[in-house]
Image (cartoon, rainbow, N blue to C red; front, side, top):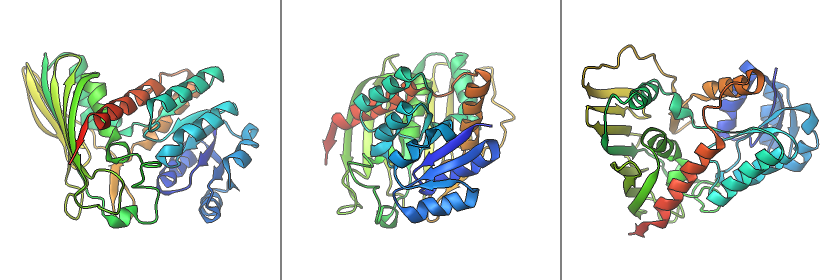
Length: 334
């Protein structure tokens, strides 16, 4: 069985630990907050460390490090783990800057290790089905795309946390909606032109960036698209949806987490018999994306033990960061 270590013992690390415990062995955990590290270590009979340097001195005892630290530390921690001769599974977003993504990829290549980036929404059943018909050309030429991301993140979500800071969070598109950006690129292709407008309406003095944005995109293939997003949906998450208008059909993936096929009208074809998806990740007072980390770990094990194909490469992670960088750099702040 593959031996794992987790660095960063916050909320998402709990999901990682559960799946590691089912599919491999959790050997070590690390967090600068001793109580967090000790609690997770005790639950899974792992060894607790309180700095990444201390953890990596024991690198011979495990094979993979799952990086679950704040966004702004992903690059630093991944590069150190790769340099210690370990494979890395990095949470989203891969990093906050393209140049940091490039350094991560270089470290993986230099040390001949694998660098996996988590994009778990690719495993949502309706997403899998729509990606398949796109690859098969069943929608014909793609004309336009609408991505809606309407979630709720109140003041309590950001309280006493790295979330909401430019240095460690990076922005709403990085922390809340990078999975959605990934799906746009994965399904439709690379972005050519961007225009955007953003504002902070409800979170003044709470976060250092926008809570609402509108983005207009032109893709390399000629399609145009929009992204409408906010974390101001009153009281709870409302919707995460992707609508595609093509020459031979229209489809909409909706629900709160891109978990439902809400509409389809496709020439001479019907998407049928979709399997039930996993539930969303629950984090106390708020809900995240679909909990497909089990499938991420299945792929990692298949790649490392059976020479399988990686479903999300580090280059995919870099593309997402590059697109978000383009959006933020093309923004008019209101």
